[in-house]
Image 1 (cartoon, rainbow, N blue to C red):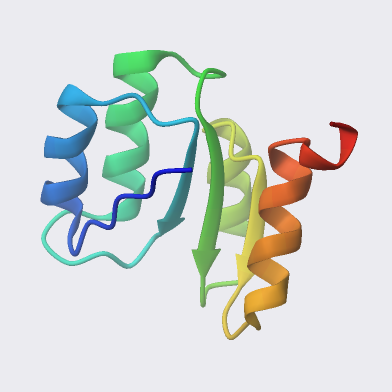
Image 2 (cartoon, one colour; image 1 turned 120 degrees about the vertical axis):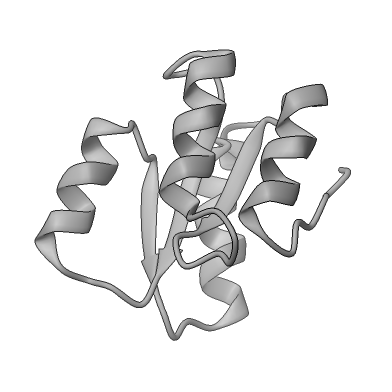
Length: 99
């Protein structure tokens, strides 16, 4: 499994311009370009259902969840979280337990 870490939203968009990941673990509060803009770019480039998306956010409000449903976010993880939460969520979203 390969992983790429983008320190801001513009770096993430630059990466997505050349690479199609299977999964995006996305913080909505990225510097430079927001996580929503990164998600919008990924969906426009590769399609709405092609890339699975897990959003991490400190914002648990209903508006963010509604926007996420409209953007086909697979799962939300609210901050703060423990590493096991990420591992289990990735396994579920990628359907690794079915292998």
